[in-house]
Amino acid sequence: MHGGVWITAARERANLSIEDLAERTGYSVEQITDWEYRREPILHDTLVAVVSAMGWDLRIGLRETPKVDIAQVQACLRLTPQQRLDRAMSGANALMPARNAALRRLAARGA
Image 1 (cartoon, rainbow, N blue to C red):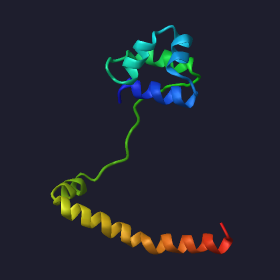
Image 2: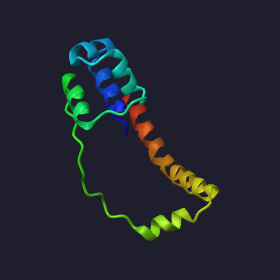
Image 3: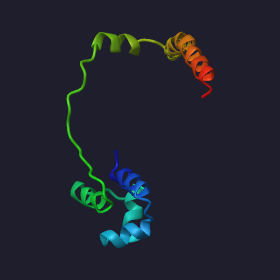
């Protein structure tokens, strides 16, 4: 993900304008705009400092992912787009009774 996405997200959560952020960090409005619109890359250390100036902590790290059944992934990749869509719709339709029951319970509570 481009660093500008993180700057925009942090700035919006902090309710700051680009001008406010420029004043806080000493970077120009043009520079911040270039980062946010992904016209220029931002160095990691600069990104961390800019996000920190808005009161946010940006942590980037590695973590182990759950084990993946490669055979299952390969089998899914062999499906046509229509077969994948049919599978997804079948799964969604299987959840409908549970959804409807939950809606009935909410309605019975007057929610």
